[in-house]
Amino acid sequence: MVRFENTKTAYKLKTDQELRKAYLLFRLFSKQLLVRFGGKLVLFLLRLRIPIKGILKNTVYQQFCAGATENDSMELVDLLSDLNVKSYMHYAAEGQRTDKGMDASLNHVLETLSHSSANSALPFAVFKATAFGSTHLFKKKSAEIPLDKEESAAWARVLDRIRRCCEYAKSKGIRLLIDAEESWLQKAIDEIALDMMRQYNRGEQAFIFNTFQMYRKDRLAYLENLLEIAQKEKFQLGIKLVRGAYMEKENLRAVEKGYPSPICVSKQATDANFNAALKLILENLNRCELFLGSHSEESASKVVKWMEDQKMPPNHPKIWFSQLYGMADHISFNLAAKGYQVIKYLPYGPVKEVIPYLIRRAEENTSVGGQSPRELSLIKNELKRRRKAKFQKQK
Image (cartoon, rainbow, N blue to C red; front, top):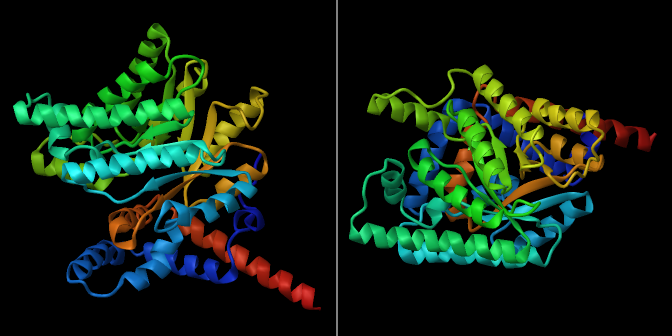
């Protein structure tokens, strides 16, 4: 089995200064009120054009982002590749509202796919469907509300942008992840993802992956139904399996609108949902490809044990382990050191543009089951190990 406590392997790329800075950040992230109001304050100060971008760039941005541009990020891609860790890059600017902005998002994805096709360290790319169309349209389509003439034309442009990405990905041999979004937008995204998988996942390999947020009560049943469809129609399911990223927003909206929350009632229920989905996928690898997007050591260990029990090689082509850049390095690098297929998500973009993404990362770490306590413990252990090693060397 893989030992995730090996901090020497986990933080091989981090200097002492970078580790101390990371320790401070995760300490701050453990303060829920500070993160909640701090995020709002950052957005407010940026709107007032207060010069705080330098502070952000040297702290939270440096921890979680690869660079301002794709080219800036390539040095990190190469460093990770040397340690058997692949990457997938994403221009993390969000909230496009005009056709010009949506076309710009399309060009970013196409450029990333082109860049990835020339580099074996970049086997995946990713997009958010709402980068190609307004949330208003996705909301109406998900609620099965008819679109007017102008909206129908706009929706056709959304579908064209997504189809162009999927077709280009298949032509370049790059797997393409479609991000999950809020439940009131997701039905339309699911339908698009299914159509794209039907079209481009013929044969033995999946090129198009949909994302399943297993903190939703309905996702296991949906996955079971989707597997039946894939088996009947003989196409591959690309499945990015995650727990979820919009819990507070989902629960708050359910209260405001007066409907039952789609979110599982507890972390234990989410974990049960997640584990059942994981078991289903692993038992149907002839029809599925798994992209495990998890910072849970327990989840990674389950897959590793299953692979060992089945006498599967660590680099099995249908199983990927993924973590965000700047988080869960103890999982990523220890798995990679044992030969497993590991991939890091590398967001990039100008500081101001990626702030919404960075605020979500901070909020994610404040939850009860968040990453901060574990990260703090491991970083502390590694700094202690390094001090001890330096002392022994000087003796």
